[in-house]
Image (cartoon, rainbow, N blue to C red; front, side, top):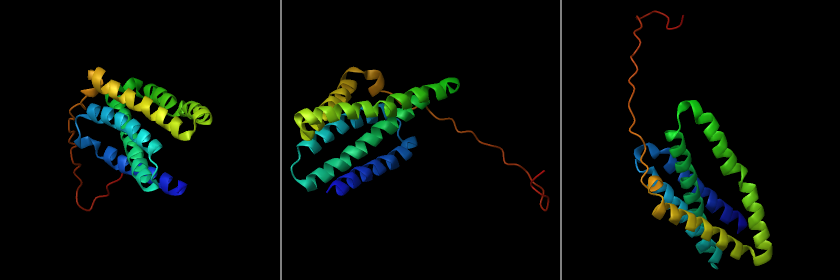
Amino acid sequence: WLALLLGAMGLGAFSGAVVVMNVGRIRSLGSVFVVAAALNGLMLVAFAVSADPYVALVFAYLTGLSGTLMAGMGNNMLQATTEDAYRGRVMSVWAILFIGLMPIGQLALGALGSLLGIHAALAVGGTVAFASGLYAALRVPALREWRSPARTRVVMPQPTVAVGQPTFR
């Protein structure tokens, strides 16, 4: 069952990556971000309290999907609003905060799991994540209403090559 649960979460993450891959068609990334953040927490709580393993598979899938959507949208929004001169530095800080702090959260979750049990620890973590997403949706309108900047399409001139002439120099 552990392999199935991890596989369901991975399949959800893959599905989220496919959505993020097509994000160019979505203008309201801010609303997708806050909904995904709240949904991630809600699905984690639902996963923690589900007793039926088949239902837990569905919640694991939705947790992976919403977590990848949240991470992908946050990354996209950050890169779209950062000036080119600072993008590398800003993305380094994002990586430290997003990836580097994950082991600290896992340590806290493990400690809480030792005290209260893993189901309670996951429910507490999901509640915190849901509350954060809900707070962002209700109280941070700049994040909720963020829209991707309009893209300008650059048309590259087609090179003219004489027939029969080599195309390299």
